[in-house]
Image 1 (tube, helix red, strand yellow):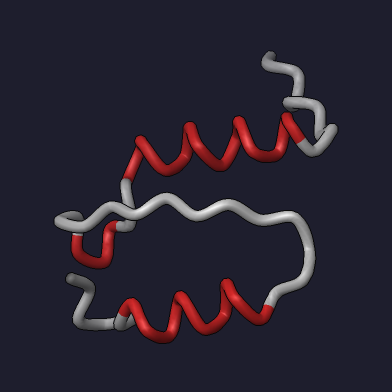
Image 2 (tube, one colour):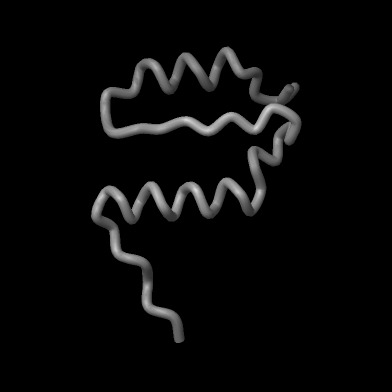
Length: 57
């Protein structure tokens, strides 16, 4: 439903990328792309790839 970055462009980039990937679809979030829900997904993905979370101060 994103009128700035149509889903077809995102799917094309996703299908072209050969590295590790996952996609979450937020069908009614327009250009916000999942907002804080997406941030949690991104952090979980990075952790699964072996990236450590930065130390909090």
